[in-house]
Structures are given as structure tokens and as C-alpha cells.
Amino acid sequence: MIADKILTHASPVLLMVSAFGAFFQKYIFNDTEYLVWLLIAVMLDLITGITKVWVQGGHKNITSRGLRMTVIKFIQYGAFLIITHVLVHFTVNGESISPVSFIDRWAYSLLILIEAKSVYENIVAINPKLDFIKPLIEKITEAIKGGKTDEE
Image 1 (cartoon, rainbow, N blue to C red):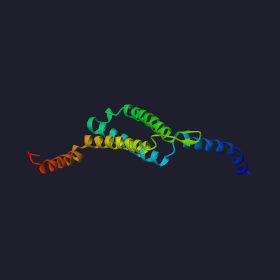
Image 2: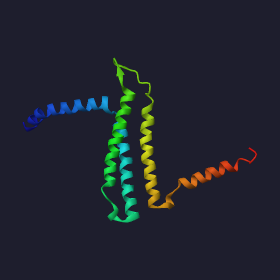
Image 3: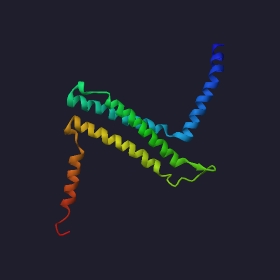
Image 4: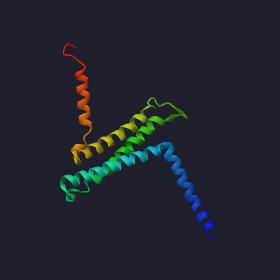
């Protein structure tokens, strides 16, 4: 009896939520799994950023600025992802005519790479001994130079 009343009143709400979800997925953004990966990367950036500030200057140097920057990042990334979704999926008379349908994979990768680079920079700032890229680049440069003569 109570369950019937709950379901009776919940049905319109569930229908509205379902309709909004379908609208969002079709017209706003449809790759929720990617959003989870991006959220993990952004949160890791936030955590390593806070740790970097703490290590470099103590807990008193941790301010709300980093959190505000993360909120701004979510707004920017959200707008970027929505515009990318629109560019890839727009239709005219029900027919997809996007000349840039390839761009979504590039755009999604770009955001993840930006976050990965930021996390890496934070980790190196926390402990410079963890900088594995600089020695790797030096070894690659040496290998390239080592295989060439001055006459080439």
C-alpha cells in the first residue's frame, strides 16, 4: 500500500528524470564512462596540487584558490566537451553532416593528457627525484646524436 503510493507519486518524477537523461545524452554529452575517467584525472590533479602546496609551504599556504581553479576547470572542460559533442553529432533534417566527426577522440584525449601533464608536474614539484621524463629525453637525445656523424 505504501509502495503503491510512492510509485504513483514517483512515476511523474521518474519520467521527467528519464526524459532529461535522454535529452542530455542525445544533445549535451553521451560518454559518461569518459566523464568518470576525466573526473579521476581532475581529482588526482587537485590532490597532487594540494600536496605540492603543503610540501612546499606548509598547510597554511593551502587556500581556496586551488578549489576555485578546479571549479573553473570543470566549467571550461564542460563547455569544451559539449561543443565537441555538438560539432560531432549535429544533424540537418535528421542526417548527420558533421565534417569533423573525428574530432571527439582527439578532444577527449587532449583533456586527459592535460590533466596527466599537470599531475606529473605536481609530482615532480613534490619530489624532483621522481622526474623520469627528463632523463628519458636525455637518453633519447644521446641515442639520436650517437648514431649520426658530423658529416651527415
